[in-house]
Length: 324
Ligand code: PBG
Image 1: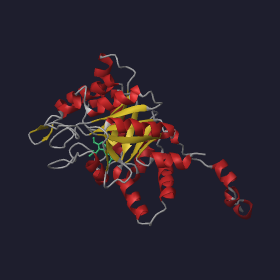
Image 2: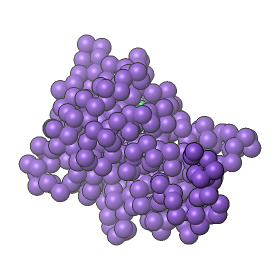
Image 3: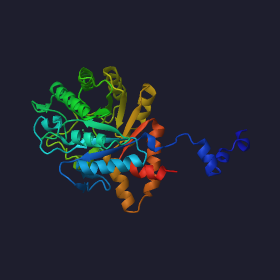
Image 4: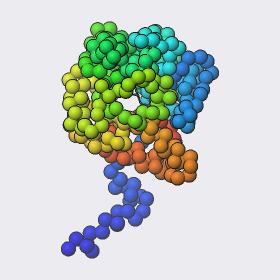
């Protein structure tokens, strides 16, 4: 009896109808653009595996932020490539560190942009791990102490949101404590709550010069087979005071994004990571895929899976394509 009375194609006839009944409406308002800050002046070096993405000195970062704000993107996520690295990632704590100076400069430019900082040690340690090494492994509690200090120095520089990406246990509580102690109760925490140990971070490690020099990150980042465990990580981070939670990467973990979205009532972010970007760029560069079409389809898919916020290297292009 359903056919011929029911004809779903009726609502697909024209663009006006399709637009009217569309369930997922992608806009620039939910996008965040990642940026890589390096030392020096007037530096802008393209990352070879990520066409269109650059390592830039603070002055050029501010220029790019003007462009990002003009496109209607609400925020940037900053990663630092420091002058010097050591075993404890000390350069991540300096008031005049790369990220701290970039935050201050963006603030000074008075742009309508949220400044989010990645809180981690891998870019600052000479061994490339996300924490300090003791007895051949990353030591959790000593690392958490350093991460909290790093988050505080980002807040002092003017960050709106700090985003710990290290996957140490207890870091959200430590960061919340130190921020509150120093009267930064308004600075929010976006925790990389469910961050998987992924091959899709490859190009990022070139961009951020943060490859581990021995071993891998399997003792702290999550195993790709686990989804229930993501809910546990999210619940713990919320208990510790996270304001928003993230699932990362996005595309191989759309089911996890959906489960996290259904299980909690805070904003959920998804990170459309470097390897996901590089695959699209490589295929589009070869003429194998229509870049605009697949990027908008990918971002729509991530939003449809349940992400309220999408961090993506495609954010600038997508905002241009979405502009009326
Ligand atoms: C680590 C960090 C990583 C990314 C963001 N923060 C890499 C890693 O864990 O090795 C990856 C982002 C991307 O691939 O785009 N602090």
